[in-house]
Amino acid sequence: MFKRLSAVLLTAALAAGAVHAAELDGTLKKIRDTNTITIGYRESSVPFSYLNADGKPVGYAFEVCRAVGEAVKTELNLPNLEVRYQAVTSANRVPLIQNGTVDIECGSTTNSLVRQREAAFGLNYFGIQVSAAVKKSSGIKTMKDLDGRNVAVTSGTTSVALLRDFMKKEGVKMRLLMTKDFAEAMQLVVNGRADAFVIDDVLLAGQISNTDNPADYMILDASLSREPYAAMFRKDDPAFKALVDRTIAGMFSSGRMAELYKTWFESPIPPKNANLNFPMNAYTKELFASPNDKGI
Image (cartoon, rainbow, N blue to C red; front, side, top):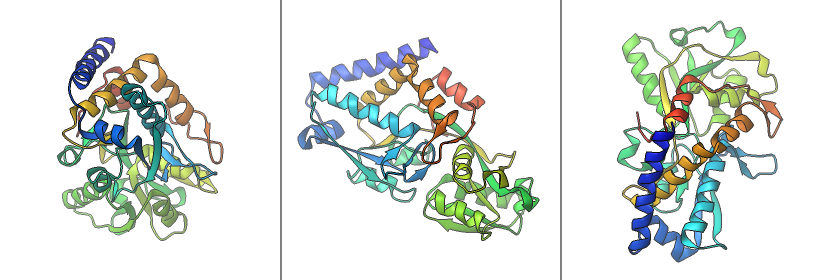
């Protein structure tokens, strides 16, 4: 781990030196010229990035973006830098990054090769498996049991394509109910309009914890894919990427990322003080041991 982190930090440090030696451009120039950085957050991606009871964004990934904001203050010597927060959805997060409305987004965004054509990603900070949340009383045990059922999915997520590929490969049919966010999708399962909600396993755990009766639901012991989460920002901006990677690498090496994991996945969290009791899975352990920005 330490050799890998040392390489990451060295690469980022060399890039940072190049920033100081040359005229600022890209995102860092935009931030310096406006004295503002805009962080994109999600409203219901528990526990990564979501709104607390007081309407303020919180979460594991949100803290990563906050750390990047602090690093920018130091890098550009802007102690009074204004940090703005902009809500994003699965559907608009990439366009808002591309058009400059948002400078960096930290949430439940998969670092995929397809998305890398449109945006850049920092070091991966979490690894998930795509699965389904169902009512325990439904009798559904496997993904194939969803044949002929209504399945809630969120527009703009990788789950949509994964389900379509699964249906084609396995010869099953599902009616996909598109939703704007995770809370809406889970509500369809709660009220019986959908038989399942398919998304990343840890997001399902978060949504289940926010229902009135969490014990009524379960996550299937099945997976469509495993995916890494990472911070997303504009492409072709090596100076900003170096700063992001240097910040996150430092959080890994200092133990800060491990502290954040314990806080948001293994301790009571707002707004209901529910504990996800979600121990680090094998994939996330791999990412912590060998930080990288590889997409899938």
